[in-house]
Structures are given as structure tokens and as C-alpha cells.
Length: 241
Image 1 (cartoon, one colour):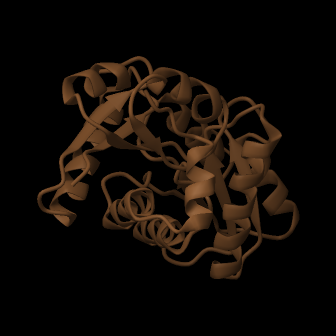
Image 2 (cartoon, one colour):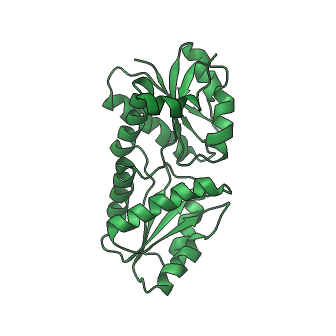
């Protein structure tokens, strides 16, 4: 099987790298025999180029990113340029697996709630924020409650502002879903803001979950056995030697 390289953003917070490596183990357990490697775009080692040089063979690269903002659109393609790889789409569109993972983490944190904040890292790229908003809308519709998005940086509203907006609609038991793959400074920032403003519970990030592993393997399978439409999409994001 073609090796799989998971590429995370990277963080100074050791919890983030530990979660990424745990997720890789879940993916490997779900697909026995698949060589699953891990790398980071910044703030942690190894980088994608280091792993790809060590592999010395073609690979499928799945970005452990939830939007195609700067790191997905520019940084990652630049770091794998010159290697024989197929680069898949990020993970963040509102797919059944992603929504199931978010809902499970939310239900583990809270029982009943009448308002929902979907907290994300944030980006200045409006196109990337649309994906967050679409995911939030789908999760809110699934729960049957009003929903607002909150960002840690790069965009508004903050966690506290999103909670305030829901309170103005009459919500009193407001929960916060985590549109994050792992804990880190941005996760802590937006969650603290929402909780201090009166949210009753904050969910854990998606983490090393089976739902996320299934989504990653679907990206991998699309890259290795694509139909014509999939092929057209992926080749726009591939870098071949």
C-alpha cells in the first residue's frame, strides 16, 4: 500500500503532537499493513520534507487541517513540492464522519443545551471561514438549537461574543463544540472566553477518534482509487517530481 503521511500544523503545546501521534496509531489500527507517518508544518518535528526523503517513495499526504487557509493552500503545497505525492483535501467540510465526531465530543461534555457555539481557531481568509460556518450550521441543525461560530484569532466573534449573541436569542444553557483536532493555545483561548461568558460546558477536540480516522482513510482511498472527478480535484493539489 502507498504510505500515508499525516501533516499537522504543529504547536509548542506538547498535547498537540501527542494527539497527532495517537491519531496516527488509530488510523494504522484501522488499516493493518498501512505505513502511517506523522509530520508537522511548524513548531514541531519532523517536517514533511524530512519524512518524505526518508520514505523515498510515492506517498499520499493528508493534511490534518480543518480549513484550506494559508497552511493548507500555500504552506503545505510548498513544503511537499518536488516530492512524488498526492495531496488530498483537508478534513473540515461538514461530512457525516466529522459531524459525528463533533457531536460525540459534545455529548460527552454536556447533556441538554439550548444554544451552541462552534469554536474554531480562526483565519483571515473568508473562504476558509465559510467551511467553519457550514459545519456549524449543520451541527446546529442536527441538534435543533441556534448556533453561532466563535474564533480564537484572526476573525470575530470571540467565544464570549458568540455566547452573548445566543443569550440575546433567549438561550440559557449554551454548550461549546470544538472545531479543533487537538488541544493547544488557540483552543484554550476560545474555550476560556466562552466559559467565562457563561457557557455551561466545552467539548474536547476531535482528537484520536475513530470518526476522524475513518475520514482520513476515506481521503486516502480517494487518492489511491479515485474516480474521474476525484482525480481532477486532487491533481490541482499534487506535486510530482
